[in-house]
Length: 319
Ligand SMILES: C[S@@+](CC[C@H](N)C(=O)[O-])C[C@H]1O[C@@H](n2cnc3c(N)ncnc32)[C@H](O)[C@@H]1O
Image (cartoon, rainbow, N blue to C red):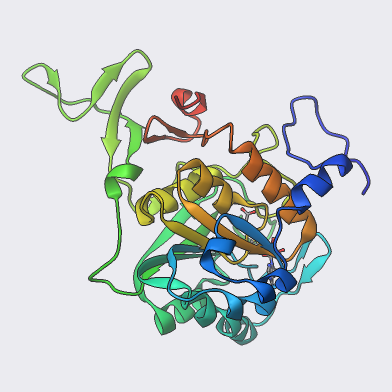
């Protein structure tokens, strides 16, 4: 592969040729799954395979949480695997060809999140409705997006939230509170009402809504960054995992990419399994998972609290 020239402060993670053997030895393949696909064998692993070749071998009803970040309906090159933009009905058929199989991996009281952009969201809503009970649609204001001279810049993504059973599912809202700057600090009897004064300013802990504007995409200066074209931020995945998977629970990601779901699951004490077709991406994932042994930091999540985007303390490390 041709070496990219990078700026001095560029922290993008790469895998050297000398490391490839080390990280590939952890990977599972379709052949290995044919011999053993018990949950204990699959736990905390990455499967390098086409989802279509392995999904039927995966155990049913085992995942507390499934996070799906599929190829969006855009023409995109995933390191040689070219995804061609389809018309709406073709994209819906593509989703229908694997989505129910992935849902069968969910526990009866499990939760599932499905990501997409404005173009794919109608099809995503349809497959969610066909297979689960939708509880919400989160909109993530992405900050960065490609500009277009004849259109509005694309600066958002949707994350559909669904469950198998709306009367029985895990949701820990206390674990995903946001620390926000208080613009109009109100006092009662001279004391701050529901906010605290600190040396860095006045802050309030708030419950999160379904509009997420506190998360930027991974930048080249962030250690979590890889060259994956559509990598999700660890902070975003951390919210999904903390809210919807108990500690020690099991998270599955059928389109793992650079490994973000597994990395964050590991950092937060959850078990994981991911499937990714592209060899290079699986190596990046394995390297990130290994690094998570010694660094449990999630940028923007400090001492159990999510900080606003670019706020001072969001850069500090957790204890
Ligand atoms: C939107 S990206 C996921 C990015 C990921 N959330 C991350 O943070 O890096 C979708 C991924 O699905 C992978 N993919 C596409 N088709 C696949 C298939 N049939 N089986 C397994 N992986 C596939 C692509 O290689 C790509 O890495």
